[in-house]
Length: 460
Image 1 (cartoon, rainbow, N blue to C red):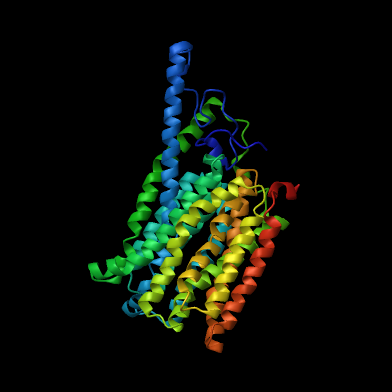
Image 2: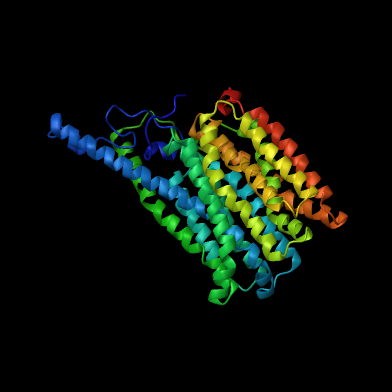
């Protein structure tokens, strides 16, 4: 299938399939402009109509790009803002050790369970409307969890917020392909960078905001404002999509487009393909390591002799160095025929950092921090792969949902297994050895999916 040649914001977005190429001189996401009809046809009138269409199309693309970046900014804030305030939350509610464990495991579980249901939602609602609802659920969940005094209600409302994140996780790769078919790497890099910045800002600002406001509830609830802003930005996009769908139904424009039921993966099931499973294990192995590092890297640095504040700064440094990598990696992936150099390069960086953390964690800590950040470039590369390994919107939704659902289930085991090994052995040899095993799995699966292949072809 030939990629679309213009931005799509109309009925094609609702179906989740790539739009048909636009006629010459017209934007693919617009119905004929009245100014271009009889009475305004030909010569200067037609030129002015086409110019207006191009201006509106460019403005619409900028609005969609800004809306995507703002959604991505939200995708980790509700998670990373909780960690620094977890002790205060446990004291204030109060919360048992079991409940605290459930809260820390909940993100990966929610991403897996709710993410797997997103194709079903896409078959019934347009992606822009789903994103409005997802950001609304995120905002409401964050506000409700800081208003409750019951620990289990805190868990339940956190699950509501995470459900909104899970839906957006699956939708964004499809929307990048739908709206920006010739800029997949660049736009994926932009929203990957935004996601990383959001995670870092929330983690670093939650405690100062809580101290300034006099309590942990403001430190957690503050980020609901960012989710509300993202929802508001998607409202006009969703309204425009719905209006054009209705206009297409009245005029018969787009009657040859695929039925909405095909959008969410009704006929494309990634779990029935080898590529789908390879992508899921690849995503899961890199997420396994990333979540384990987020949970335990600061403790490793403290055991090496750093003070708690310095260990926290080193962990934050990994995220900070990852920001430009998140921007560049998808662009490189989109321009390369084979991704094997990137797969091997990130694996080498991770392997060297693991060896260094065991050999000399104190003296060369900054070197290992930078290498860890380079190794974590696998995450934006995996997001880019989702858009590059499917030909259609339906394929992207199915591959995205399956990859992230299975992958986050694997990731949920990471912090727990590393913690158990550390608690049993009292040192970091066995935990880091487990990360090396995950790295070998990541490299093997990444090598297999690095060359061009498409999920639709495997199904045929």
